[in-house]
Image 1 (cartoon, rainbow, N blue to C red):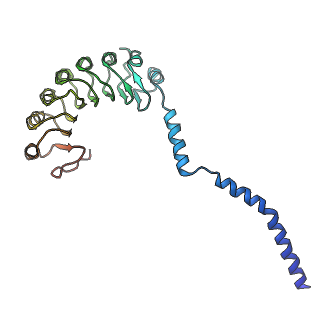
Image 2 (tube, rainbow, N blue to C red; image 1 turned 180 degrees about the vertical axis):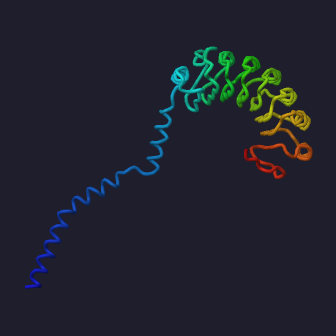
Image 3 (cartoon, rainbow, N blue to C red; image 1 turned 45 degrees about the horizontal axis):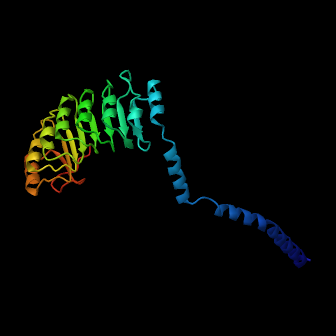
Length: 254
């Protein structure tokens, strides 16, 4: 009798498992259809790429008191967009544009802003005319123009900015004489020149800035003798050479 009951229970278990088997297959198939980490990551990137608020929308939001800046890393911005800013936009303290191409006309529109502190324009071929226009915006403290088309004469115009403390410049027409122009901006504390052929003499000129705290030079023409002079005479100066800390310079973490 006991053996008979045991056999009945065993047959019941087999029937139950057989009934559940199709459900297990469905659940397994569903798990297989879940997106991979790579697919999830791609979806997140695509969503981020389309979620950036445009220039006009950010301008409108700032005017309604929601922000003090316009910052775009992917959306293309040009002179037509910038023509919408007005001298009454006193709230606007920061403009950072990483896509598109702003020319001298756009720079002239920016120059009318009364409270602008930080300006970054990537991929924007500003000439000497554009730099002269920016020099009229006396509130600027941080200026980042890594792809300009200006010369040393245009850089000289920036000496009119009384509060300019950070300057980052790059462009094919900036020659060794740019060093003297930079050295004429007494308020500078941080200088970063990209692809500008500054030589040993130019290094000495820039190092003479009375408030200089950091100097970054990428692809310069400074010799080892020139660097040795700088390290010996300015041991507290924070220096980067081609995006690296030289062996004789201690890393600085502000």
